Image 1 (cartoon, helix red, strand yellow):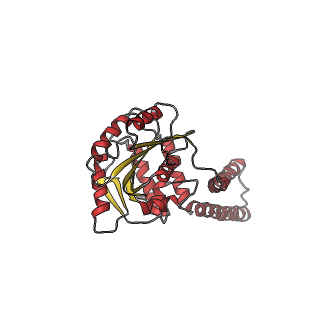
Image 2: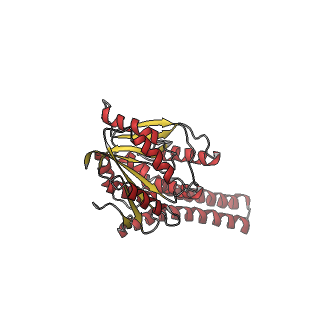
Image 3: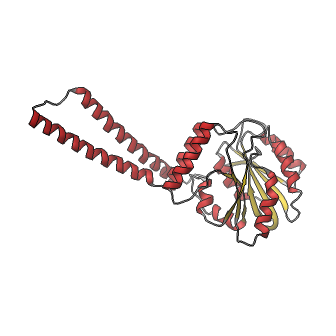
Length: 317
């Protein structure tokens, strides 16, 4: 750890269109940070564009400032964040995306808050005050996800919170101690505790390129977050199964009484088919919940590395 160093971690996935703009913008803001020196740690998680070429050029131009890590394949943003945190050497560590939706203009205020506040603040995070400009259906589902996970989990995840944040070394070391394979950083950042101060800002459109997260990817990511930080789905499976059992008993009793009293024979195959399909669907739903948790456990027991580095330029690692 270097006491006068700020490490800026930037995960990159197909960012060739925005990387030069990001670096130029971030550098202008970092010039105001006279109390610290700066190191960038770019983590290349893409193989289909010229991101790595741009990082090599930046590293050659700024050899004492720009470091990069390039994976052997796409391991995902969670792995990129973890790799960057592992390689960061600063007393303060910032995490931000290259798309400029987290404005670098907040960096001076974030650092000043960590250094000079009277309160013991370990993290300055950012939060969008609105989702203006975002697709309505996407925004709706995201809000519902935050509402749901905060109801069923003991770990609070702030609605609108971004990955863009600046942390102390103590908090980063705590995050690195969480070595689980199935990572959900928003939950981990909150779970480790520490005092967090939120800076709010208006939603900003991506500077260049296209959004790398599709609706389906966000949906799967939200499911991973729910499974990682709540056991409620398992309770739901038990509740649904027990409720189905009670309903079948009541329905069977109803048929018996109707047959005895009213001499009404049992209805034919349509009602039987509907009942079988209903119970079968409930069973498959409950098995699916159990399978999701078992699948996560299976991945954890394999003890595979979170990422594999193919190329890096930092001689100290």
